Length: 146
Image 1 (cartoon, rainbow, N blue to C red):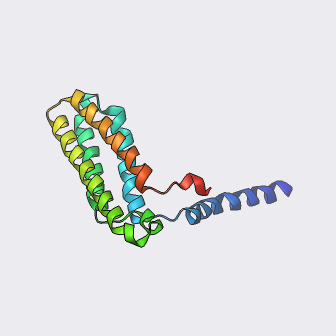
Image 2: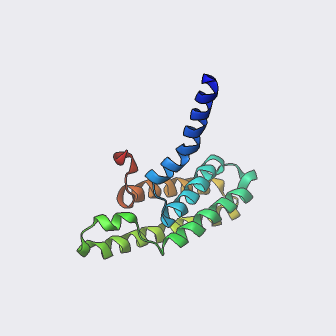
Image 3: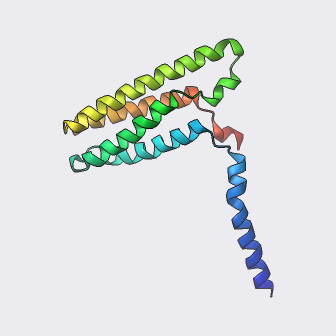
């Protein structure tokens, strides 16, 4: 009897876990776009030097580019933390950096179509650097809150 009660309690707590996690970190439209970009980018970095996977790499670049373009229309959540006088410039700077990132996507796409995987790997590295720099400025640090 005790085992059934314990198993039932465990099952209930496991079932409630995702709801608690979702309540802790509210998902934004931009967060969803960035998550899609991040997943495609992680996979792309693992295979960028393999010319036999260029078709799949191009599909991943298309996913990254599509979500980057869509995120141009959105504003970083950190905007609210900036003084009102700085918010417009903050968003404009974010959009300018995203445009540079989208340009890198176009260059990467061209390199992959030309089967120049050495250049593609270099561009992929530049995209990674741009991602890290952008996150330092425009992304809330969720780790500090937990």
